[in-house]
Each structure stands twice: as C-alpha cells, then as structure tokens.
Image (cartoon, rainbow, N blue to C red; front, side, top):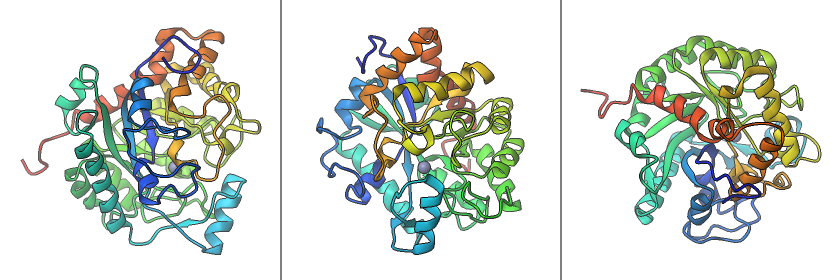
Length: 355
Ligand SMILES: [Zn+2]
C-alpha cells in the first residue's frame, strides 16, 4: 500500500536519475549513496520502496551532466528554474554515458532477484507476472550521439528511450532554455526517424516549444514528455502549454506528471500536483497522463509536501479519487497509458539490428 490510498495500482515511472545519484555520490541530495536493497530513511526510492509502491517499470535515466562552476550555465539554470539548482554542464558525454549504462547493469547483476533490464518484447509481456522492477534505460539529452546513426549503438547497449535535449541546445534540437528557439534540426529529423525504426521511445522533456511541436509531427510512433507539468496551471519553461499538449495527444503519446517543485508552483503539495493532473484530464483526456516523478533528480530542491518519495504516490491517488477519478482512470495514469506507449514502440524492437 502506498501513501493514503488502499488502491495499490501498478506504476510505471517515466523518469528517475538513479545512476546520477550513484555517479555523483548523492550530490545535491540529502541522502548519501548506499546499497540499493536497503530501505533507507529519506531516500526517494530503492528496491524495498519500489516494491512497496508496486513500481513495475522505471525509466532509468542517464543524465550525463557534471557539476560545474561555469557562470553562464549557473545563470541559465537559475533563470530557468527560478531557484538555485547548482550549475551543471556537459563534458565527454559519450564516455560518461557508457559509465552510466554500466552502473545500471551493475545494479542489476548485484540485485538480480529484484531488478532486470527491459530489453525485449518478451520482457514486456512478463512485466506484470514477474515480481521484479524493470529498468528501461533512457538517455537524457542526445549529446552522446556524435551522429544520429549512433542511436543504433546505444540501442544495442540496451537503451530504449532517448530525450532529445536536456537544458542545453544541441545539434538535434533547441532546449526549453534556449535563447533562440530554432526547433528541430535536419539531424533531429533523421534522429527521430531512426528512433522510430528501432522503437527507441522519443522523449521531449526539456525540449523547446518549437522542437516539441516539430518532433511530434515527425514521430510516427507515440512519444513521451517524461517529466513535466501543465503551463496553464503553473507557467514554467519546463512545462507544456495547450498547443504542445494537443500535439502530444494527436501523436498518441503521454506526459509524465513530475515532482519537480519549481514546475508545480508555489507551495507545492499533493493538491497542487493533482491540479496539474486534473487540468490535463479535463481538457485533453485521461489517456494523455502518466507519471514521471524525477525524485532522484531533485538536486537542491524540496519534494512536494505529501509526496516525499515514491511510496507516497498513494496520497496522489486518494486526492484524485476525491476529485472524481475512478480507479480505472488512476490505473491508466499510473501504469496503462505509459505501457501503451512502450508497447507501440516495442513492436519495432529486434534482437539484433543487423538481422
Ligand atoms: Zn530532467
């Protein structure tokens, strides 16, 4: 049972920076890195908490960023989030990404009884019957791809989702923090087409408005915006406005409602998070909404009150039930909508890309 509800819906969490937590030694978080099978006080998630919360799949993100004293990056990120989150920058993204991928495989080999990497259509069929937490490996920002064709290499290493940008402009797309929103580039178009062929789920979190709209026009498979909220409820550079939500709905994708306090609004708590869910449900339909907590990405940022870690999501389910959503609707938000998007992309997953 999780939080305040006796409804223990299965969960797919569309965004968690678990490898970043180990990689940066807990940088910015109030808890130090410890074994993942410990039910560690104050930690946002670990094997016991994911199990209690009934989490089935975690999009295990690779945030290939490093702490920096770079002043322009600090300024950009303070202006973007409205709070000091610490400056981060990108160096040697390819090498750092490989290390993150190894971190996920190392965790899985260490805790084989409880963890697995989601790689095949067969794995996806077994998600519900096997009592494991499945990592779906996802890259946060396409900088590690020196060429769009490199997505095939990462696919072969187990990557099944790719976010076009983090908070920096890159050769594929403009970021939500861009000073000049140039949208999707030619290489960006090629990259999305290649992702679709491989069934690598396109993720538009952190992308600019133009990049988002253009990418949703190009992608023939449902995409995700793995961790963001609604601009109409709280205006924030990371959130989606109605035009973007409409484009995502037409694409058949989902938005993962996120726990990043500056995107939720002032006095962020479970009610404010529910406001974002209800706005999208009422204006665009329940099939558009999923969950992408980003708990491990909350560097220097407080969690919303009532949603301090993954086991508290039950408080959100109770709040949503109180606002008239059925348990079927909540299960769609918690699990089924995201599963639908994974399944549509997984139809293109092949054992080897050369067969
Ligand atoms: Zn992020």
